[in-house]
Image (cartoon, rainbow, N blue to C red; front, side, top):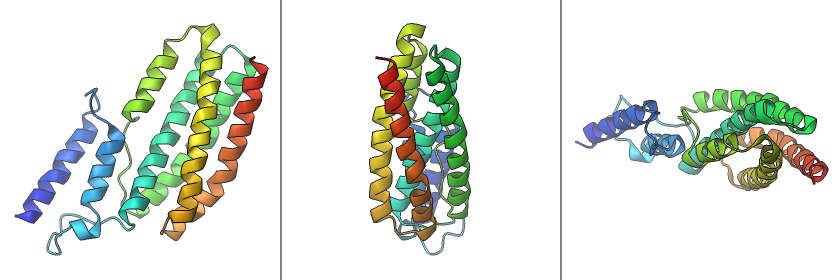
Length: 198
């Protein structure tokens, strides 16, 4: 019975991830739920239909959080390239797309190797921010985008610093330690652009 319930839960979660059109669907939360169901202690020993994640639940949650944030940086960077008026804002957006796409690809490869499900689309908060920024007038966009990039990178650095101390998986920890200097550089760059927009 437990095996049937778990299989149905996973199947429902996969359907939920694929139905991206639902405004109430948070892809990050869905990915977290799928990963939680795949944690070894949540799987019946006789259940061959589910391959467990190769990391603990906290490590898997970090991966979904980092993937969601990285996806948002790329989407917002593309928006900055389209809507930005100031050359430094456009260049910063281009850097976000390039650097975060590379980090996202590396994280996706790690996630696949560890059997961690990643968010399929932006989380609810990140999509809301993208929608709000896309409605800004060209004059207001640059300041709003860069202010968000400063806040977002401060949050990302904290997430990655905590992960560097707490992650159990050596491969994920190596990814974090490799990525942290880039995030710190992005924060300094964002602050520099923000100062130019005053």
